Image (cartoon, rainbow, N blue to C red; front, top):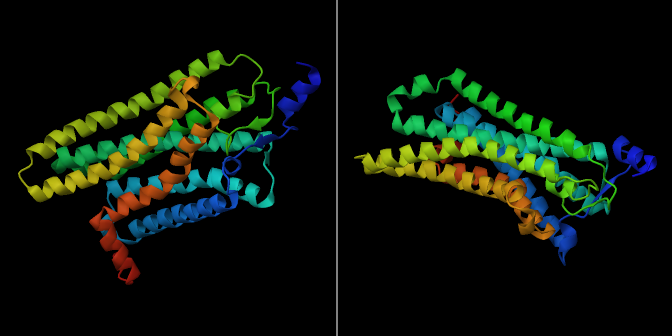
Length: 315
């Protein structure tokens, strides 16, 4: 590769072209409107959930503290990719500079990684609440909750700080077209003209470790929870515990399933179209579903929402 190509690649003076989601469909304008509506639903749903939990003292406990963090992450997560995608469609441009691409990559890796660990912390919280209710105020005190949340953010940022610099310093001397609607690592790596097999192997191992720890925590927690629920004498207690856990498991399956597909399956299983659909699930659809799952299926939240709408705050 000549010096000119190297300088253009490494100084960020050459833009990438995002092929995008809309170019794959016959009616891009209609899809743009649908994505915009979904984006507004995600923002409003998560912000309302945060406000409801903040304004109602009945919801000031560890479980809802974690849910507010999850909603905050989802608001940031969907805001990293969707506004840029919608603006590009409206303005008729599809370019993103190398620094913007790197920043977008870092933010979604950090937020995605943080959410992976936060979901594990939420599973542990449910395990303590259901299996050790008498010790719950001690084992899940405010300091422990802050430690779990801050650890989730820290470990997620490690993912961003590890993968982003390495990915963006590879030489890109092939087509500058990213067959995706944002700068996702596997899509950007396909543009590199150097051998990335070692890096892809290391990225695979990194993702295995990042998913293995949370999956172990989640599966162990829910194994104990199911055993405890089975032993409960109260039918009402069983129903409430199962409803809470099933909501959390729905979120876990959606998010972890998409992550496993994107970062752990061999490249032979991937196509640009499939990758965009899966990314749509966990970057756009999941942030919409989370507030619905945690509010519509949760009587405490629905009651608090009614109180807030009626102006009866419990501070």
